[in-house]
Image 1 (tube, one colour):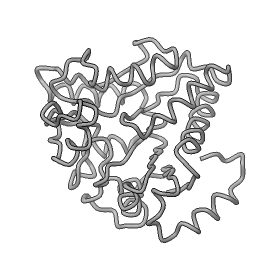
Image 2: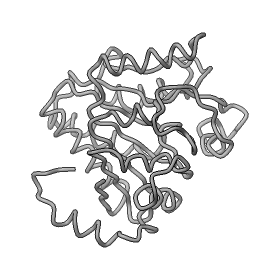
Image 3: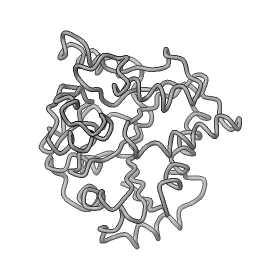
Length: 261
C-alpha cells in the first residue's frame, strides 16, 4: 500500500485526476469506478478541468457506480445515479450510456445485486476504483464487520452513517434510506487500482486503522492492505494519527516522477 500525504483536498484531487488522465491516455475506454459524497468532488473537478483544457479525451471512458440507495427512484435528486450524473457525467460530457450501476429501485434487490456484479465482470473489470472512507472505516457501504470476501449485496446502514448522510436530505435523518446496494469488499478488491482519498481530522483514526492497523473486518478499509496496487491519498489533517507519516513522506518524495501513483 502506498500512502501519499498532500497539503490539502485540492492537491489530492489534482493528484488523483492526473492518475486517471494517465490511465485514459493508455486505455481510452477505461472503466473508472466512482464514489459519492463530498470527499471525491475535488477529483471530479480537477478531471473536468483537464477535459475542458483538452488535456485528455474521455469520449470512450466508462463510469461504474460503487453503491446506491435502495428504494429511491433513479430520478430522485439524492439517488447516487442522479448525484453522479451531476458531478461526473455532465461535467465530463459523457452520455448516459457510459454509465453502469445497480438498480436500487428493483423489485428483486438480490437479483439486482447479482446482475451488477456480473455486469462489472463482463465489462472487463474496473481499472481504477476511487474510494472514500467513513469515520468508522467503511468503504462503499461495507459497514464494520462486513465480510472481506463479500460481493455486491444489500446492506443495512448504521445509525452513524445515516446521521452523516442526513446533510444531503435537508438534515432530516428520517429521509435517509435504511438500506443500500453496495459493491462488496471482495468485488472492490478486484479493481486493478484502488485509490482511497481521505481529508479532514475526522478521518484520521480511520486512516490510521486502515494503513497501520491489522487487516480486520471491524475496519473494512483495512482490506486494501491485501491489494497489489492500492494508493491512499490523505491531507495533513487526515494523516495526523499516522505513526509512519515521516516515512510515507520520504518514500513519496523520492519516488521516480515517471512512476505515478
